[in-house]
Length: 366
Image (cartoon, rainbow, N blue to C red; front, side):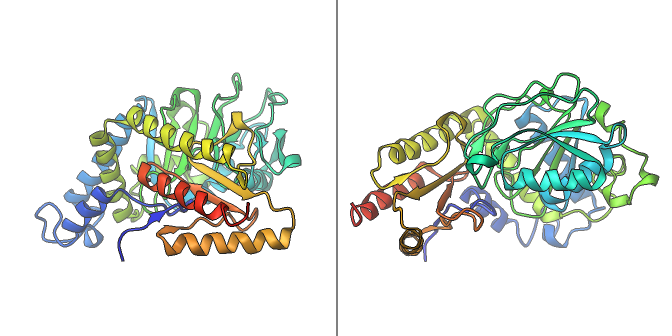
């Protein structure tokens, strides 16, 4: 079977150039006589890999020198816990906007260690829009947002002004899809399995001044201390070596593509094409407020009013799409419907094929 177009929200498809490079180096990386999978994380060869990964992501994301770059484990889900554990240490309060399922999980973890103050929620309309910010708690330890809501398909196109309160963001689904001014944030984090590589590694970028507010390493479990991880350059324990290696190759691929500005242009074209089709379709539609639509995650549903009939049609759509090489189009189990995640590695041809399939499919029902 040939390569399919993988519309999964994660793990997502990877660039073929990266997969081919990894294949070529699988048995013998840089004439070391071994695979990166076998390599000691204390070796000179791996030191070069992780150092290059940091150098390249700093270049691609324009990360200032006064920010630490960490390669951690546990995905964004562990960051939901690790961040309040480290930074709810003064007022024990954190502001948050409730904009989707992952924001809800971050909210719940804040409340394990202190108090989460909701400064805007779109739960009333199934998270189909981004709510206005109610305000900022002056003594909050930080303000948390989910920059791109993977499940619901919304995204911040302008950042909230939190004043002197540090801004923290989950940027998992939006990372490196477009330019992002990191000086607006004190900490951002992203699971790799969207735009950064395979599952297993989590990118954390943290302002050094903000890092100083964290407790000393001796006061936290070692694996949950940002200070300890920064002190050991992400090598306190065995890191996800192969995931970091693929991360490095992705960074090289981005540079070869022309950088984030070029990727952004390509992503805009893909998203616009798909949204234009959905807005003109008599059968499918996107339920998200236009001004809040995600560049990366496009949920869509049918106009069938009968829930049972709609669910039956959804299953048929997903099954028939798979048969023609369009895979992982089922919406998240919590919301149903369908979803196309069109991350950096998704070519325009994949989106065009999806639209052609949707156009043919809808003819059966209109």
